[in-house]
Length: 193
Image (tube, rainbow, N blue to C red):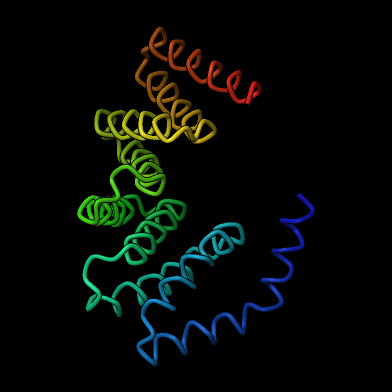
């Protein structure tokens, strides 16, 4: 926790320089640099509640990099913009961005990656907040299954927790209990690792 606080303090102190670096990359058509920097700053913007600023930088980086076509960094930045939109409560925009990012990853052959699995999980939450519960459940399940194949048990447990919460929200208490039991088993396996 101390490391996070220290990192945030350093980023706070350098935020003006980071903005200048983003502006420079965008103004000089250094698209990959802009995409990478914006994606790396997304957790900072999210932690500090700078959702609008983060979305603006990410949107500019993604828009300016259209000439790259489908690209892993463009997909990551699109997903990050969708994540910030979701956090800001703009669920319709989040859905569109997250769907675009996930589709781009699939076209790039990244449909078996942790980034893809995370995109499915975040998209599931946006869908749930839009009351598209069937689609949300499908995305959560697909995310959980992929994380399990990747042996990313903490992330699989998180997606499994989302499955349980969604079942509970729908009044499907037996299914929610089964999903929670699977999450508990995942945490037990983590303890053994």
